[in-house]
Image 1 (cartoon, rainbow, N blue to C red):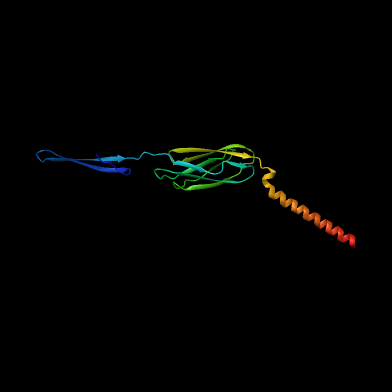
Image 2 (tube, rainbow, N blue to C red):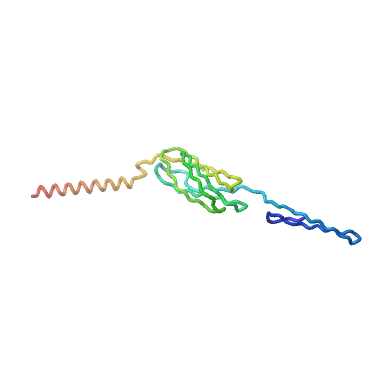
Length: 161
């Protein structure tokens, strides 16, 4: 018996010798193929967020046979993205925002051209609350106070004339 480490077509020579020293040789080809395995897939990114805020996600797959991989990302809100074929193990970084609150399922399909792997991640998006933007309210309040101070100062200056 013999094992091959790579796929390919190999010439096999078989020589037999009997007890009298007479030999005979046969020649044949052995076609060795490697079974294709699907890529393994990972999704990284937040599982919670707020509406109208952009979030970063990374998707990556590796293929045991090192086949190139293409990705299809369905964001769960009716939008999707398709990549070109990329080298096995290369991560893809994408950003996405959801405009409405709800639970969305991100579905990523990684294909090596023959086999696919599908992975999902649920994301809970809540309505952006005013409290989430308290610093904007603070700046607005400061601007109003500054405007009132300017108006009062200009009124006092006008009354002194």
